[in-house]
Amino acid sequence: MKRKNLSSAEIQDILKRYPDDKTESIARDFNVSISHIYKTAQRYGVVKSEKFKNSPASGRIQPRQRLSPDTQFKKGYSGATKGMRIEAIIKNKEKLQNWRDKCLWKKGNKPYNTAKDGEIRFRPSSGYWHIRIAENNWEFLHRHLWTKHHGPIPEGYNILFKDGNKNNCIIENLECISNAELGERNRHTQYPYDLQKTIEEKNKLNKLLKKMNHEQ
Image (tube, rainbow, N blue to C red; front, top):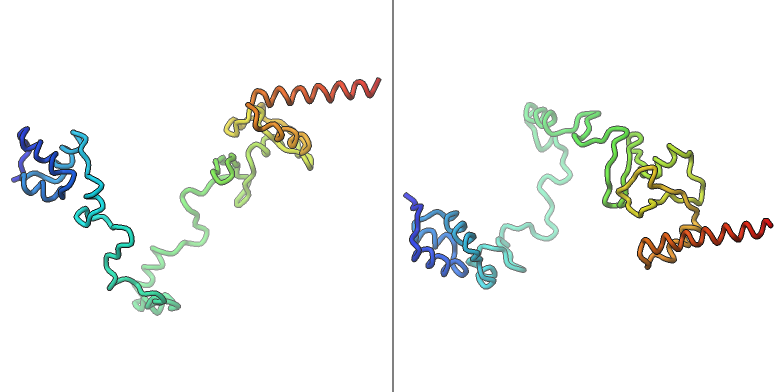
């Protein structure tokens, strides 16, 4: 029967051996479970040494180590069933039908996580939120919202987030600007966001004053 309690002296011996000895050996010597040794070491913050981790005794696969070269597939090996039809592999008709019933996708079957029309998901690959319009038809959520409230986006124009936060995807936070205006903004991206907005407002004011002077 495994012991449950250890004396202070035994605990000190375990902590001394733990960094460089196999946990199984320590557990056997003190007649306790392996988990008991792990918990004791964890309680006192003792871990395995790097020397032990990199040794064969740790049981870890070492760099460039091949565990069973005799049983590994050799280069150029072709599987025994390569190119064969399933009927030639499973010759028993009952087993073949059972395989078809349990393993093949049924016509019209869709994965459990298939989205529905109108569902919104974030795509890390693009960094934007998308909305499903129809099967195999997804749109950027911010462009979809703008079109829904203001109509089609003119060619050469872009939908941006006023506060620069792509997660704040609401119509009040969206604006439509031309490629020229976007290029002008990108010239000041090295500045803090508040300063960028100040420069932008200044440029708008200058354009308005220039237009008013031209009309006079």
